Amino acid sequence: MNAPACKACLGAWPRQDHFIADCGLTRAYLHEDQFFPGWTVLVLKRHATELFDLSRDERSSLIEEVSAVAEALAGEWRAVKINYELLGNQLPHIHWHLIPRLVQDPAPLEPVWRITHEPVSLTPDKLTSLIERLRKVWPRHMNQAPHRS
Image (cartoon, rainbow, N blue to C red; front, side):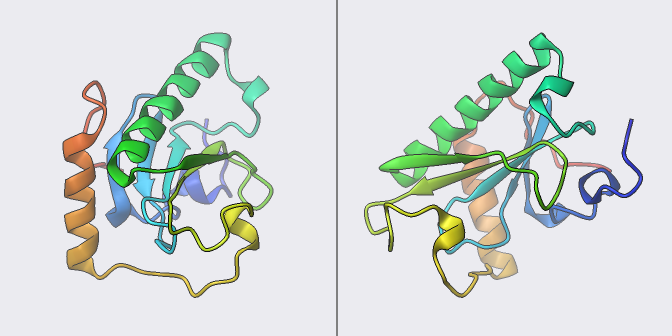
């Protein structure tokens, strides 16, 4: 059941033009701010705010999706480390931020939230190109068809 005021359930976040793939329990989107290249968000398809709101099978499937996407991102960006963030303070809907941390990272010991920077928005052409590039390396078992609300 969708929460009526939830931006994720309403389709107001993340941006639909940033959709990468249907991963099963989640949908993957390129984050709007690409200051950290490859920053991706996995959003649970149904409304839940806590991991304990999920069944054991859902939790297991969710971590497998997170892991598969993280591996694809790490390979594509040759990441030194992937940051996994599941907070929910600002948007109480289960969603994971997967952030490749690269060799040229400006502050490798800090979480991305503490690094002051100007957000990097991709042009529509660069956004489309990057999403197409990601779909080529995406885990094979995940549906890459365009998202339909």
